[in-house]
Image 1 (tube, rainbow, N blue to C red):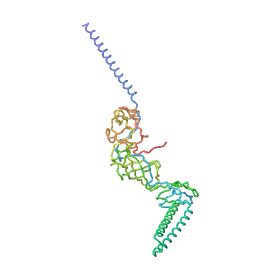
Image 2: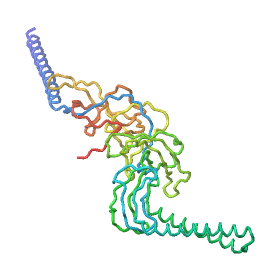
Image 3: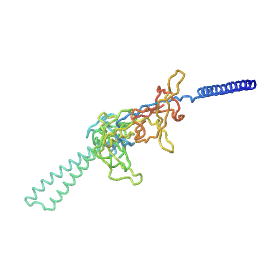
Image 4: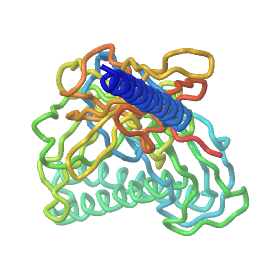
Length: 383
């Protein structure tokens, strides 16, 4: 009995020591796990600041784009056929003139005097012909004399017509209605044949010439609506219609020339201007769109980062959303926008800038104070 009591005491002591040791070990593990969690929390991935947009449907009118130039329906450089001294200028630079309106008169005094002389000779030949015709009626002269009189009369009349045409050429008229340009010709100046006097342009309406690839021919037809704008008038557009489709395709470029008539009743468009042409082709289409900056392209395809609910809190205790990368199928583009054919749905919140530093699960701070361009019809900006 005496031996058993010390053994029991030693066993109890050993059990107490083992319990203390196990408790200490368990407590250490709990402490270590707590410190690891604290360390991991202090070293969590910092949130990335991004901008976002909501994917939404828009209606697009399919358009063909081309660069062309404007050309007058009628345009000439008015010249003179004959030499002469300028006597009178009957127009003002920039004036609208009518068909047949006198522009310039050359000195024609000597020509008119010559015309008067030839008219007198023609009248005399006419008188001689009438007298000899009466003489021939009574067989007083031979038929040969009468024939000579007829030939002389016709010759004199031809000379009169020739001189009258020369006199008429000394008065230079507008061949058609339009607007004259700036002239440097002055009264008293001597003009040689083919010397330019002034340009004359008929600009209402005006033609727009442009080229499109042959594969787009099936989308073109005469009478199709076009919109024209130039950098001279900002975003303002001018309406027109296709007038002619060239029946010949350029074998070097495989492009076809298109001629369109553009309304220019205010006469603001001028020949030679650069023109940006949009041709409405087909019926309107409805697309889910995003800014083009939202798309990231890599060897595996096109991707976007969408915004998903997260678990990490910021310093204010707010739960931050996270990024999730998804593959999408982009479609046609228009301005700053791109159509999304597959991959996301309407109402999806998508990252539009700052996505290059993102990876799946990274927390996000959304700041939409400055957004990337999202205009379907942007215009160039000059800095």
